[in-house]
Image: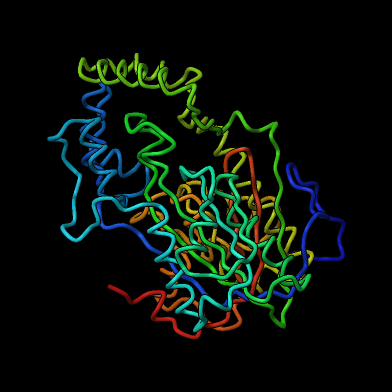
Amino acid sequence: MIQIQEEWPEYLYIDPQVYTKARARLCGLGYYVPAGVITNEFYSYVTKHLGEPRSVEDMDRAAGLSVRHVRASTLELCRKVAGKDAPGLIDSPKAPRNESLIDMAVIAAQRALASAGRAPAEVDAVIGISSSDEYGFPTVANLVQLRLGLRSIRALMLKGACSSQTEAFQIASEMLTAGSARLVLIVATEGLLPNVMHILDWKLSSLFGEGAAAFLLESGDEETYSINGYDAHLAPSLHGQTALRKDVIEMAEVNMRIAQLYAEGKGAEIAQIFDGSLVGYAKMNGKEVFRIAPRTMAECIDALCRHAQLSPDDVSYIVPHQANSRITRRLGEILVHTYGWPPSTMEKLVDELRYYGNLSNVSIAIALAEMLRKGRLHDGQWLALAAVGAGIHYGAWLVPYHQFKNVDAVINFE
């Protein structure tokens, strides 16, 4: 068990003294996932055409997930890239044909407000988050503010990959503590598969789904603790560059070349293109991410518990960004073997990746909603919410859970 009085450990990545202690309460939660589905059958089909065949079972073991929820437009893109007869692409007749990231974000925000029993007019600030939106300005935060009919209030935007969700918790907590807001809406929306990566880069694209999430934070009686950091020295592990107008012609030419190579089954040559400097598509070094991601989250969680003078036994659940099931497990192992947490820590790890995939900044909300659906969350439980993203960006929020006014708004909807 951690002894708070002992000398603190040496952390490899974080500065444990740069943190926020604030009185903030999570009072609302909402999420939305689109109706379309991509199964592992699709990615198995793609790998065979690329000349590096993987079975459906191989894909299941490698990715740790079986389905990804996506919009109808993303399914159409998959057919355009991989072939109109590609299997594993499941449409829903009820799905909107032109569903946007903003459409998803607004639904998630409405559900979060309903879960808290609050009206849009009560919101004092909006924090928008996305790793994959196509809006330069107005931003996602601005457009959600417009669609919800909010008054003229502060609406800011975070774009720091998957850890922007923990960054938003910290910023919202600081706003509430400063008294500049009484109710803060955090809204995230993600479409990485069509917007940030190439579908044929299957080792990366097979990990992701689409969706939106929203949190409501208000001033509370109990102290919460948050920490975030960024280290661009680690950026080569996972990074992406937004394509500008000057890049469009070059990207179109590259995409035509990739389509030709795919038709010829030349997967090795396509892989060489992805490994090069290709503006507009994210690139990841999986081994480096696996080395860095779990440790940064473990350090953040351990440091916050020391600041809060909580023992590991006081933490009911560890809810990390749902990036990869192996990363989640490794996070627990580092807490146990490096920072002296008890073996029971492994039972507190929350992993809801299998039926959603990596949803970037939407992932923690989805995991919390699934915990509510399964009856795992109870009033007063301490939760450690942690994330790591490209850049490399990392953070965590240590917060007690209190039941929402209308839980059905989170888990029961058509």
